[in-house]
Length: 418
Image 1: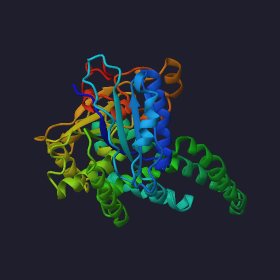
Image 2: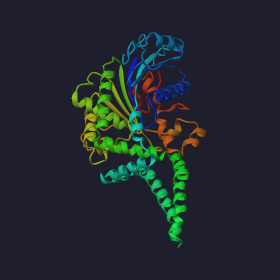
Image 3: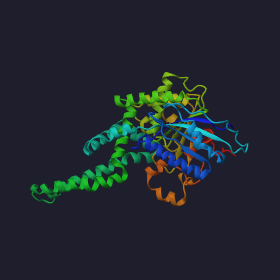
Image 4: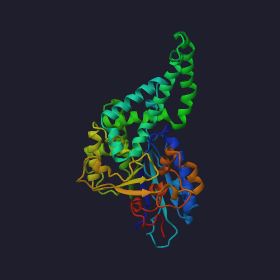
């Protein structure tokens, strides 16, 4: 198996209030963790000036290449945004015992922080109202029924922020009408009303932030937007991202990895689908791996109105030049564990995405795992974070390591050269 010399990575980040620079900083921290665990060198370059999406080079190498990596990275820095650096030398074949491998990956961090900020805009009351509106839309479009049918834990994840907030609203109302319920004069509501409002603002809202409640409201608003495709601002943004991705795919590379995390998988499916609709042969002759990590495609695709998204899932599945790896985890309740996404989207005759089942506790020390296992959002982020231990899945190795990303489809394949 020939090692990868040059790779282009398009990573579609999840629904987090982080811009490209913040995602790059996280990637650098995770890459250093991975390098320490697996014993290789890594150099994460600065963002290319003016790049959109934010792009940067990552150079990994064996111990023998460690000292040369920083200099090579500097010498090969691109002259303009979106230009991939040339690879240095020829990578050895896996298993030859040669220590001199080096891999250069040009990473494009496709975040959607602009959309997150837009969805989180407005005062608290407006965010709550629009959040409950999205909840009603998802229920009416059969989304909730689909969640409980295919992944009941995801159904509970959907209900949680709305039930928590509904309970708080009910308690607030109870406090406000308490004097009337006790038979006191309605004039007593002059103090019980403000008291109820203080409870909601100064007690419930800070408490709810522990569970990122309003952020989850925004997440469900985005799910509706990407399912219905009825918002001009979202559609224009997707068209803009498709143009940027089309430019990135023109770079020469041995391998193209399109990775996506959580809600980012819906963005990726739309963007890749747009490109395939316009240029069915766009990936011809390229080695392309589409890796969905903790994918939330069905979060949007199960809505009855999501016909365009489901059609684009079918296009991706039927593209012979794309190898689709669907990375799932049992202890992550915010994904559709063991659910065949392509079939559920109505394409039973199309090749199914290759499911890769991972265990977070294999990636972390026992102490670290015990610390995070009850925080479901933190567990859900582990797909793109660094490991404490060598494990079958490692995001940095998949996107910047020397082995082809396709080796992660098999538990028996080596993750590093022999």
